[in-house]
Length: 391
Image (cartoon, rainbow, N blue to C red; front, top):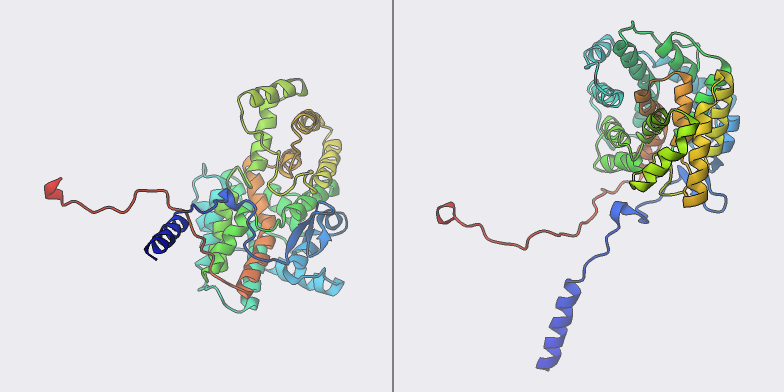
């Protein structure tokens, strides 16, 4: 009996000391359900509410996709008109808000200024999480309408230019160009920009979206959640990658230098931005659509240099490493050809992703459970504090 009890205790002790399996970066861990988006394995297509994103980009405006993400279905004509009218009526920001943006340091990165600007907007009303969904939907519309104005206002001030007030007779994409540059470009540019917004709008439980859901799960408010999402998106391993791509292309400068540049990167085991993805293994389904838009922009601009450099890098990475480009790879040079400063690329991402973030915030609130994972402790064993006088 004593031996059996001893064996039982030893077995129990051994069971207690078994190390838990660690999933670094939560890779492969399913933490919840969502009906917002999914990469369909049988087609390798990213879908929003069941629609393939490439089909949405070919047939819809960004405003229609925003409606779809928030309401679950594409809008009828009357629903779209009402949605657009509501969004356009909210574009202006207060004089106090404009003054806050005016006093941002000129050297500040636009991701820092839009993060702070969204946080300031949250101070203008008392907002708590867990309120009726209609309240958060109203705030989501407010963010969708005002974020482009915040970004463009900061852009103009950093350039030493007077602010351009938003117009209500323009689409979201047209209005953003107007507020940044004072004019609306040709339809080829607007179409390419609209496509980029659609493709960047949503992507399941990516880092920034998961951040917004974690914050929401504590019953915090939508402004706090979106501010946190912006902070996560800023990182070069997430939203900041499109900026890094263009910096690399400018470093390469000419197609003749592309292969050597890449070989040097590989030799030094440096990360090549714009390639690889945690979810896609056979290539990012968004890339062909954005690539086609980039080709249209290059033809319109009469500048194919960035396409040629991209082709050289892509061919080597796919053929030799089986690593495919992601959406950031064609988006970076596309924004460059549109005339945007490189540090504006990730804020544009925010303009788009507010739709996906809001959809997930609403979904999290509808069936909430505090997100609080466990960790495996790897520090010192418990010990006693020695009195200072005895040290």
